[in-house]
Amino acid sequence: MFRKSAPEVRTQQGSNTTMAATFSVLGADVAVKGDLSASADLHIDGSVEGDITCAALVQGEKSTVTGAIKAQSARLSGTVHGSIEAGELVILKTARIHGDVSYDALTIEQGAQVDGRFAHRVHVGEEPSLTLVS
Image (cartoon, rainbow, N blue to C red):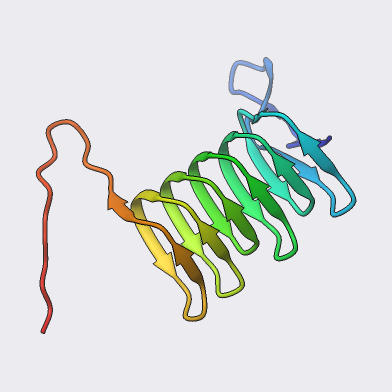
């Protein structure tokens, strides 16, 4: 909906380039029905009925997502009804997740609620590791 771009940068050769750092925001009064795809960062405070694919996702406390989420990183604090696949995932204490979660790195705050299965993603050539602490 709204897009903010990083300032223009000059390279050593003097040519103009624009940095890839951009983000889009869906405000609390915005309701979207349909899939969302963003090549950059996405901040959602409203509601989305559809799948979301983006580089980084930040979800507000009162936000609701009904659909699958795929992101390189995600910071969730609202309600999600659907599967989540993220490289770096942070689930904050106000989050309510109803679906399976697949991740590379995971942080969950005390108080968060997840109704689903967790699975650590294993990449090609990577051995799964298990560490037990007693």
